Length: 168
Image (cartoon, rainbow, N blue to C red; front, side):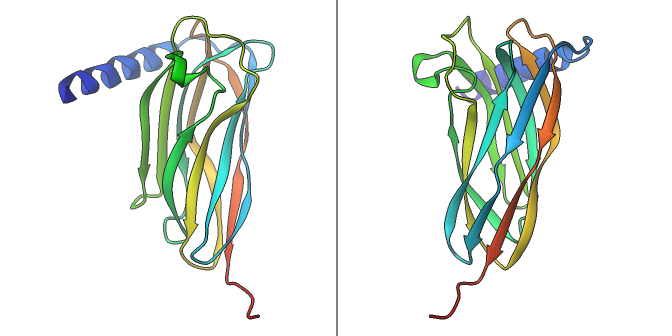
């Protein structure tokens, strides 16, 4: 089973690398919301993807953050690419690395899903570890349409601020 999982990931990676060697067409917007947390408190930031007049078909992204300020706990998939519960999306990678401060996510649409009414790609639950601010930055970002044609992408980074609770 593990061998099959590795082979599927490898095949999707090879596909994504090949896809993004084609000239970019279209325009997409990738954004990360900002949030304020208290020390030791959990919160959520959202990652959104809109491909305008075309449908998004695939994405590969690595988000970076300061792992001394926040800990990423859980990724919850949204429906920007399609409904995962109906088998419209294959997730090739959905991993958090709190040692390096990276969230890696790669997914592709299977077939032609119903039109999505949401641009929510996924949410990430985080916990504030110490006071300070960290940007949530797309260190790597590749987006394609349903035909795997690369799209140019406007990036909007998020900011997470952790503060101590006021004495009360």
